[in-house]
Image 1 (cartoon, rainbow, N blue to C red):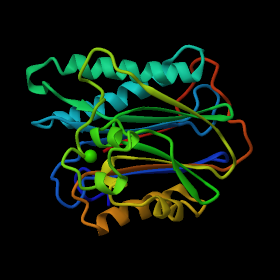
Image 2 (image 1 turned 30 degrees about the vertical axis):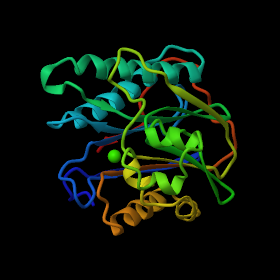
Image 3 (image 1 turned 45 degrees about the vertical axis):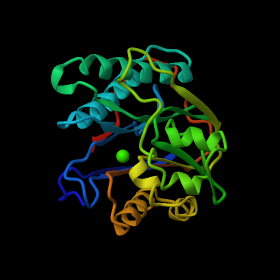
Image 4 (image 1 turned 180 degrees about the horizontal axis):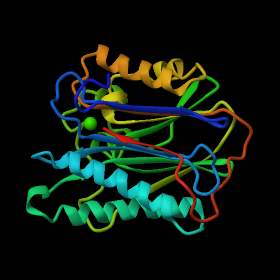
Length: 278
Ligand code: CA
């Protein structure tokens, strides 16, 4: 899949964590406006592992600029943050990414660009998820998939108000309209989810190009094996088999070993494994 323009992948295993990401332009779109990044040091000493997916939008390739800028900004802020509370650091990193995309969107050629962003960090015995837009984070635990994030979309809000069913949302004309995204205003409200970890947990982050085509039970099935890379490949393949009209991106991170992961309270240190791509 590396031979496809706009496709990228990376994966690694440590004693504590198996992770992988894959991003593919899909079968219809010439460009990939999704972007994905991972900070996953082999030895976790300072800042905990961080995984980010962003789905950009905007004409004339501005969507690609927005998603890449947002992912780079979050990784940069997280890996250079002074000691502090990880959940506050993660939320601050997403706010900083919003400011960076907003500032860049003031250029004429990038006017109106924006992006979704969903970030997963591990700190202590917790997973932290920061989220804006309609990309998603799922947790698969003991074979059950639960969605950790709320979709910031018109149809997402209508489902929460019980005005429409999820089945109706799948065909609703407003299904791609976001109610919150990064880069449209100087400040943005960032959702933050704190989830206690258990050994065997698999976290799945993905853009709508994936969750639109792949069901929760398929996500549970794909992540049943021990290796995140096999799961990520299976999920992308499932979307491609169904025609993938949109860009498809997935990150899988599985907790393999005793908790807690170090919480990352100390400063500085070498970067270990660092993956980035679209
Ligand atoms: Ca998309």
